[in-house]
Length: 210
Image 1: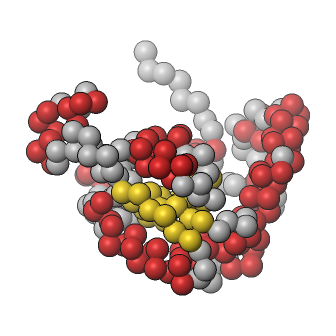
Image 2: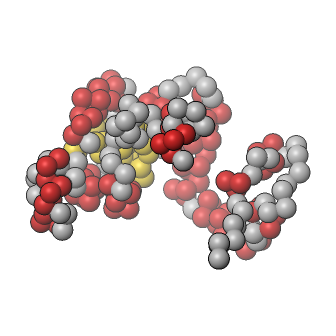
């Protein structure tokens, strides 16, 4: 028997929660799922000093620079509002050139920069259980946990991800002690622009994705 489809925000085309100028759908999470206890819980979290600082800083970056600043500029604006002096870059070796450019820009704007590439430590893939045939793409494993550890040891204030692979980025986010934002999301096929697959999902990429 086919599982019953449970509707959520991704099934909504109304987004009344944004401008409050329409009607909420019957399955709206805001009206049907979120409880007063949930509201109180998240408000308590947002009231915590670090969370409040980040929330306000992010909102100001959006409001004051809407459709004016690039992602790189927004990261620097956010970092300054957060009082971050030392920025960490967790980079894929395949995007080391882009990361060096990013570091150059950050340094020009007064930030200290410390970067760690994904192959740091040079651990062969088979030593952590990755099948040996995978070494055809490169002997050593990507090492996001080591990247996080070295950036933690360097006491970075904010870490920036540049092109870590799917899943490797997840582990980096998990082990980074500093807050993390992403400058580049890897997509080898689409020139690191994964949104292009969504924009063409009903045309050029329809057969590939559906």
